[in-house]
Length: 307
Ligand SMILES: [Zn+2]
Image (cartoon, rainbow, N blue to C red; front, side, top):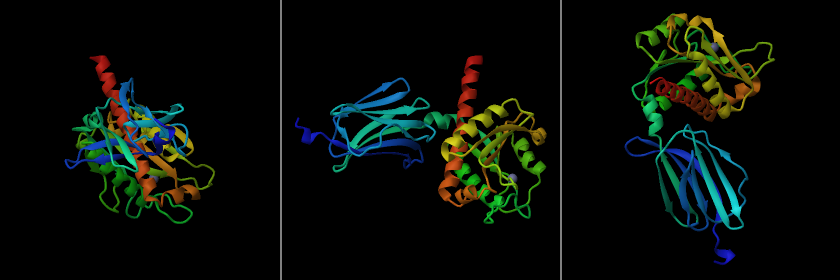
C-alpha cells in the first residue's frame, strides 16, 4: 500500500444515543478519509481498535468522556502507519462495531448501557430543588436567584434518572414554598432509596468559590454517596473542590442516604455566569447522576461480597 492510501484520522467524538425503543447507548465515532481495516478486541476494561492510519491534526492524549459508561478514549499512533483507539469503560458493556459512509468514513463502536439501567431499575429517588416561592435562596451579583437555577438542574437530573429506569419524586413542581419537613417527609413516605437536595453555596464576603456536597449525619451511607457525587460533579464542572461535610438537619430521614449538593457558589460572579448556561445545568445534572450511579454500583459490589 502506498503511503498516499493510508487513511487519515480526522475526528473522534462520542455521544449517548437513544434507539426507537427509548434504550440508551454510548457511541464512539472515528472519522477518517478511508476505512482503516480495523481489528477490534476487548482487553480488560477496554475495547481496543487497531488499524492502519495516521492522525491528521488530532489532539494528542486521551479525550475525557465521562458519560457514565465511557470514561475516556485514547487515540495513539502505534507505528508510522498504525493507529490504536482504546475505549476505557467504567462497567462491563456489550458492544457493536460498524463502518459507514465515505469522506468521512465513520467507524463506530456502540456500547449498551444495561449495566446502568439495572442499577436504577425499580429505585425511587427524591430530588429536592432548594427554596421556592418567597424564599429565593442565594442571589448572584447580577441577580440570578438560586431557587430558579436549582429547579433547572433538578429537571435535567430527573430526566437522566428516569431514562435510566428510576422513579423520581420532586419535592416541588413549581415555584412554591415547601417546608424542610415536608420535603423530607416526601422521601420517608415514599420509601425512597436516595434523597438529593440541590442548592448553591452563598458567600457574602465573596471569598470562596466552587462546589461542595453536604451529607446526612444520620445515615451511614450518606458520606459515601456525597464523595461519589462530589468527584463526578467536579469532573464535569472543573470548579474549586470545597469538599464534603456533615449536615445534621436530615435527622427525620433516618437511614435514607441524603445529600445536599452545592453545585456552584452563586455569589461568585464567574460561577453565577456559568449558571446562565443550559449546558452547565445539563453538565451539573450529569455529574450528580454519575456520582449516584457509582454509589449504587459500589453498594451492589458490597452486597455481593456479603453474600
Ligand atoms: Zn440554598
